[in-house]
Image 1 (cartoon, rainbow, N blue to C red):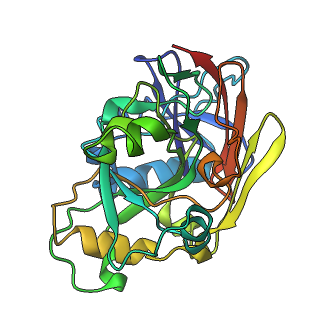
Image 2 (cartoon, rainbow, N blue to C red):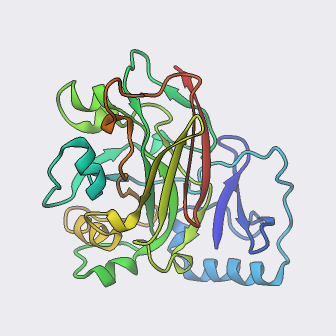
Length: 285
């Protein structure tokens, strides 16, 4: 299923994009799309059954904003340097264990919302990423196979980053990752049953129409399953938690000087195979 949330910011309603591409209203079945829903097998089956009969009301998508596909996110865990090609382009050694940082859930915006370039920023960068959404509480998982049974679904994430704040201002990476609007998410949460192999997805990103990133999750150093298993030994993962799993080569940081960092007025578009497409206009804060 392709689950999404539509409407003005803060007043989104749950919806479903059916197999024919028709937008359907879920608000008569469920209050919203969140961790409570994703952990409720009976509620998800009710949605599947209703979608199969075509009885869900149709929504007019004309001019309708698409919000983040998930609300009440508990935590955003992010994996750094998780693609072989990205490590090579930045001159970094591939890590022996996953590199972790966090983004605040309030960085999450809709897939087509405006993204703000922070004040005094000179090095705002793009990063297309596969987001993993947790559907079952995960603690001390023993195997990659077990880990995948705890995944509710997948989505497109844009891990926008300010490289000076991240790498040149001391401390952790978090100060370059948590600026307002720095994690567009969506358009859909695609349930795990529709993504049989998360290690075989193409990822692409364009800046002002020019293709910058063209990668595959096959290049991940640590697979989706391994990331979920590994994290469960350091923290409890709850339904509705989101994991950004890293970005392939092609970010501005990896370019030769002068590096083409983002400015107000730039347009970034990105997509992941089967998970939908985003488009953001960047604006100076």
